[in-house]
Amino acid sequence: MKIELEQVAPKEIEARSFEIITQELGDCPLEPGTEAIVKRCIHTSADFDYAKNLCFSKDVVKKAQEAIKSGASIVTDTQMAKAGINKKTLAKYGGQVHCFMSDEDVAEAARKNGSTRATASMDKAAAMGEDFIFAIGNAPTALVRLYELIKGGKINPRLIIGVPVGFVNVVASKELIMELETPYIVAKGRKGGSNIAACICNALMYTAE
Image 1 (tube, rainbow, N blue to C red):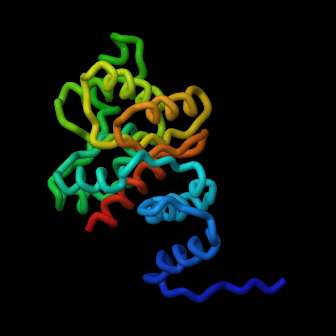
Image 2 (image 1 turned 30 degrees about the vertical axis):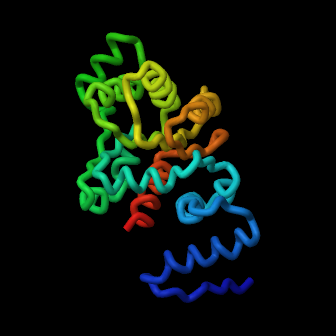
């Protein structure tokens, strides 16, 4: 069998990938204003299910981009997500990317309270008193704690990106976030991941420029 490779210049590979994604999506309806986010998630994962399982609160893209442009920082639950977020672009607006999972005070708080480090990380973020953007791609316990902190009036996020991947409490934690009035982008179901959390952040920044 003869295998034919498509000839694409290196600098054109990403653009060609998005052309293919657009073609394969066909007439699949996407919520206006969310197309760039959905397509970047598909580009990152090669999974077209994101065209159907990404859920957006009302006007969330506009609100998220306003937060980014006003200098909001991003808190993630993994070093992988932190590494994948374009920090240079975020810094242009005055924002930074934080991941507290490896911090000694977070580890100590988790041991003391019998919680996960992700839960303790959310507590640390709340104590800082900033209106962060949260990008959660791994730990459903982070989403559960954010829900509790918001309900308790202890934190007021500008945006929650809730896309943890897995099985234990993953679906339920996402459903909790969608009950809030806080702006959210959530991947319903079990799919997600740190790479998806990062690419949503990047899509918001790239389309805000």
